Image 1 (tube, rainbow, N blue to C red):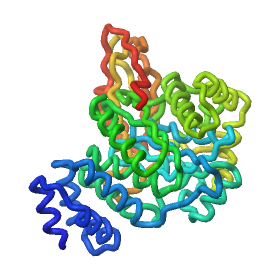
Image 2: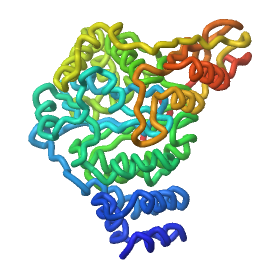
Image 3: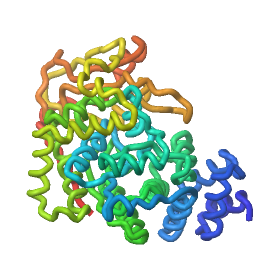
Length: 432
């Protein structure tokens, strides 16, 4: 068996055998298959797709490519949450401390930015000192001690996915259902949680542009979850416009901290409440939706969720003084307003265009080893449904150069559509 034959088979739309998929995963993880050979196979999968059996085999092979955690000694119900990616998606930073403050243990292995979508691991690293690369023993100890730990994908947990994930980002293969489903679920299976809530984003700023494609992905992931004996729920959320009022690593951390203290936009509130509710129900401790939402608002209003986030930051080496005083975060040297060119209502704020503009600013990576500038990003004063006047501020560009700022202002103006209709947006589309 060799990789060239496997590439040829998938190139010709043949279904790969279980042994072929396992051969690829094992040998790519061990460095016997080169990046350019793996890239050829990944591209063929992206173009030609995979059958249900192929996806299940790929998922399990990636999950078993390293350690598979057993967290049953901590709790019989450990809950995890994952997003398929979006623009301005800082929900993990809000939801996980909420759930932990309610006495439900949460364990999350987070990804980095992929294409135009942000990564939770990158956002956490914007907090000075926060260590996302702690050892597994420490990860488990943190869950035991404070009920929460958020880390990056380690070398020992689903290492095959880590390599494939990074490669996908650099060869424009980020929007493939088989590759997304297997990537997410391999991490979830390996990281030890037995209850998983998946935020499946759809729209202009998501890998799944339509409700139909998002449902297809959601059904595949719930099927994998069922096969792996993990309680799995998918919540389809709208990503036509950026989530919340900020895009960018430091800016999103600041917004998340404010949200934990009760200051959050309506779209963030709706998504956070619904995902938190599903996590609470899967934990087995709650069954009533209204009761769940009441409890969530309680721990926000009494400060317990905020204190839990501070506890997490401190436990993983972060400087808590930045959370207590958000002004300490370093700001971008150039902050430029984006001014409306006409009167009307914001009919559209294209999250895809915003994501691409942010990528040019340095929010994410175009190459695997590219360095992120945590300071840069975008903040929005006006979103869908808001009334604006000519010359009024729509948004701010936070940049490290005048040239990038000027280019980004043009891009953001193109992302806005100002017209006569006062549109509304449904944030929660469906629960599967």
